[in-house]
Amino acid sequence: MTVVVEACTNLAEGIWVPVGTNTLTGGSVQFSDPAFTNYPSRYYRVSMPQ
Image (cartoon, rainbow, N blue to C red):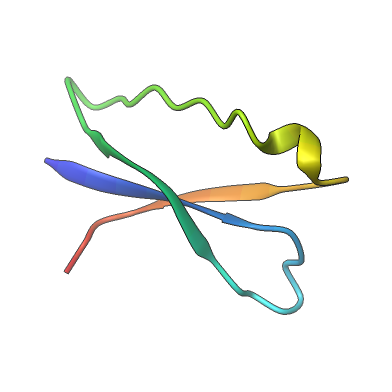
């Protein structure tokens, strides 16, 4: 199953930007965001592409 990792810097605005696409294996996924240091805070969510 393919999942998309999305990031948001402000939860009140709710603007989610895709930052990676991964394959769910055995119910888990590993993700790394090399750009996380460019933001004071960053939130992530996983969604399934439609």
